[in-house]
Length: 172
Image 1 (cartoon, rainbow, N blue to C red):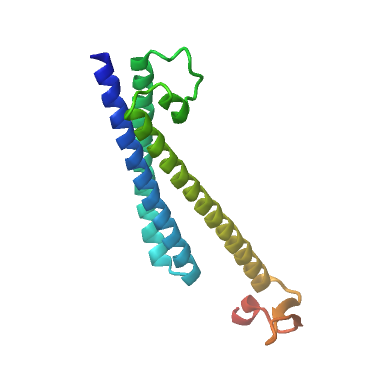
Image 2 (cartoon, helix red, strand yellow):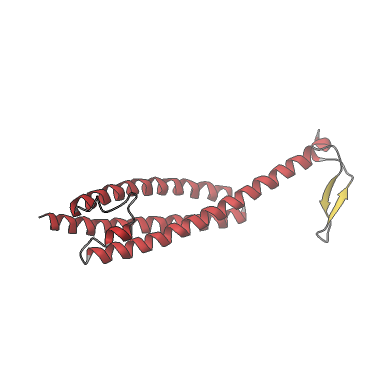
């Protein structure tokens, strides 16, 4: 009976890991689409994608909680809690599982790991782009309200000093 229960838990854990992999793949797709929207400065699409990302992130958190719960139940069912250090890596836990559960968990965990790394790379890229955009906006605002001469770009793309009125001075 206990063996059947752990076999079922291992199978369910593999399915859950595949579901998490799918959620992360969808999240990565939305993140790539959002980067394209940022390039086009399409604020409506950025807002819509961000809302979808938040829903997906909530779903991932919910499913991750279930994964942790299933992992704890599986460890208890196998009776290996004293042999494993917290946090338990799925690759280590899989060593205690019989086939086909072992290979199902290993394959799903590897796929999920790859998707999580992809989402992390996209998150870092998006964060860097956002930081640079905010930095540029700050520089634009400083140039618009400053009283002294500022640099401008000429037709050749090189910086040159401008002596004209600043935007806030010109419009009141």
